[in-house]
Length: 279
Image (cartoon, rainbow, N blue to C red):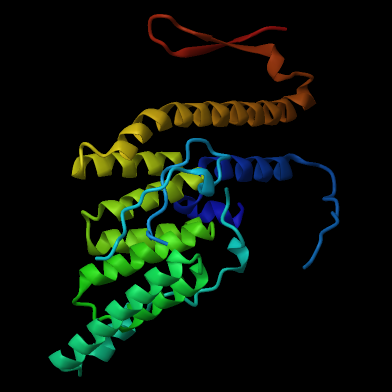
């Protein structure tokens, strides 16, 4: 079994089907594996709205002008962990700080947030990420609301750079700090949709409506996403059936049979299926 199947909680149904197919085809194959060629190797910080199609670029999306003062990801394989926050170390470092020292750090974090916002306004997204990260590394853990804003604002800059997976992580941290943070849910929903995680995106939009029943973007998304999810599931089902048919033909070939010799019929009463054999 492939390594990806050992941890199915982190992979999609499509990947599971693909791995299962590869494993079964390998085990059924009587040929020696072939060696294949390989190649080695500014008025607003919040300017996002949910994509209307999967191919639509985020620059083409209508913009939200509410400033927050309180595809596969681009270059995903090259992303570093330089913006990761070690909260355990932060907690340990704060043990010996006085209240005045913590307040001083909070003020510095506020200044770094403003610096990040200003960099964002002039499209210096990498610089804005650096400033928000510096703020998170100095802001005392007790100011959870400020930390939530820093994470959420940093996610906006990452979205501009199409680093959607990292944006999702930042939004999730912001939500952990403030479970009613609507903007964090919005940005996470947008990032989920940008990475074709439509079910997760819809779930976030539904959560937004729980917090703000009149939210226009969320209302539109709950109408727009269900048919896209159904279409995606139908496509997946067709692909799965195709792979299963190929495997079935591989198994039946030694007996001079194929899947064409078997016909599935649905019982109109029980809605169950029965398989009929035909020569």
